[in-house]
Length: 374
Image 1 (cartoon, rainbow, N blue to C red):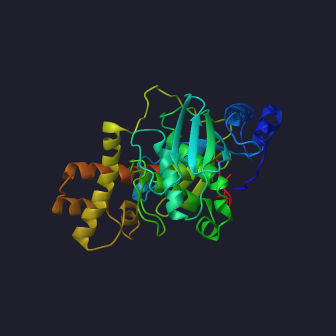
Image 2: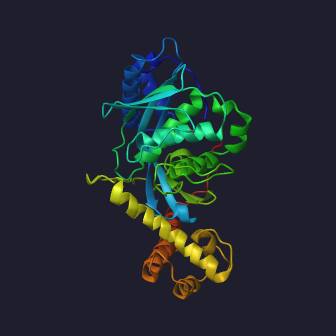
Image 3: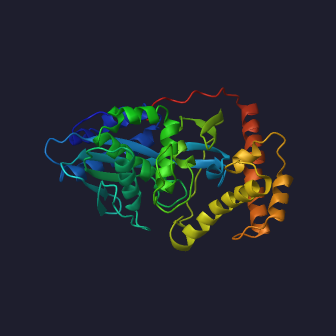
């Protein structure tokens, strides 16, 4: 990630901004749409920005999960790519510790402090920014400044294309740039590769610990880092096969010529609040419960289902027997066996066969990961 300063008025040149975005892999239509959002965000922000303050801006895409549902936080695999839709975010630094985030699409604004003690606002969209601000201050101690931020999006909210993780990444990149975190030696050591940043931001969102950093409240969703990986580590025209915990690039295939991924939004919003949040987290908890029973029954130390599946001579039947021999206090044997089957076939069977079929048609060597997330 390269940090550059500019004047907010620079986004008024639609043709120049569109051309610059097209060099990053966006189609002409997508580049034009994002340029329009950047101009809108910068226009709304310029009215309240401190005079002469340097601007920062990012475009953060959504993602498509081609294969690999509910596998990442259990150490499994998924096939993903980034979208040409996403969030445009523009910001300027402030002279205090206040962070304001204006959503130009919804015409709403959130305000909070960049402080380790800022309380979570469960169920409110601002909680993503609050979680980021709290972790930045706690994990990278120092004299931090607030920021005035404005976002405008081409990505439908709660549509299953990771608008929430895109918001997390957007606000982190903006606050990181405003506070020059990428100049710090501890930051450079930790995030030498974009996969490390994806792992960290997944932990920020879920509240899990990371690389010596303690756990936090997060946003309340017990997810993994698939979304953040797709957002930060994708390449144009390429489907990437990642495994998780830790993140590893296992393969990649080009989208076959003449093919596009068509996404239809049903209009049913994929909210993660209330009952929906409980159901989502229960799926995560079931995967953790299987690994817990496995360790207790066998005396082994595998931390998650992916590690269990990587044991030489791994047998799904052996895991099932462990579940039958040692009932779990929260979930029934049937619930855990169903979850085991889902993980096994999604991550260990369907995904590898699908990647193999695509590679046979359009063979593509795996491209090296970029060192700098764009």
